[in-house]
Length: 250
Length: 62
Figure 1: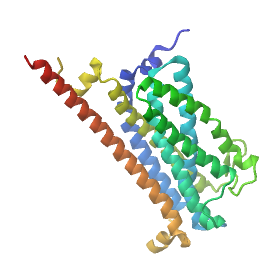
Figure 2 (figure 1 turned 30 degrees about the vertical axis):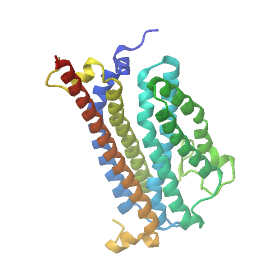
Figure 3 (figure 1 turned 90 degrees about the horizontal axis):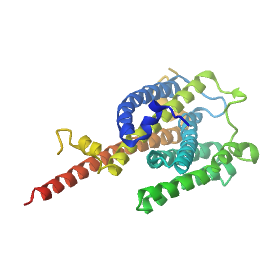
């Protein structure tokens, strides 16, 4: 099998270190720009909801955070599959870099959900399918971080973590379809791939902008964090020493 | 612009606590994550530099 040389060059940690270093500032700038635009639309332009009043504005952090908590876990499962089948070193590092941001978004999904549930449902929490499966996702992230941190050998930690990421991925479609499969207090999706959107256009734009901003933020954090991980793991190589001592190294 | 005053914006129609609790904690956690990642990167670089310097010093020893 002939692999495309330009793309696969970046599977080498050294090449990816440089690429990530050049990419993250650009993406961080874009994330800030789109985030500011989304906040402007969401907090100052989008009209009041006729049912929920101003409380609906929680959607602008709740939905993007929830989407990202699921997307990041799927990304981790993808890298885990790649790492376990092709034994690529970068995959494990990628997952270590992604997990903390995924955990943060899963927590924010639960947190903003509780703050939305209280005024709308009269309760912070119910043990229904959507909320419980999202809580499990949060625990899966914590489990992944705990497991990989507990194993001293990095390659073995990558493999164990990869297995957890793969097996746990079954939870993501359960979260997504839970509002359809079971009776739940949680409302159905306002935006669907097949049915389009039932939202007012400004609201929809604000939410999509926030979602793209959160997505870029997650990529920036992963790219930034993976450089720290690469540097730590490659510290004995010549290029890493040159990177640390650009003034010259014997 | 849909608000006629700043206090109206802050109160969010009586849902201020819930709306700002969501936006505020989101912003706070993101800022904390960025600072933590930057600190980790710096401490990694620093510790590797110190390690390299002490190795060099050992090699220089006759």
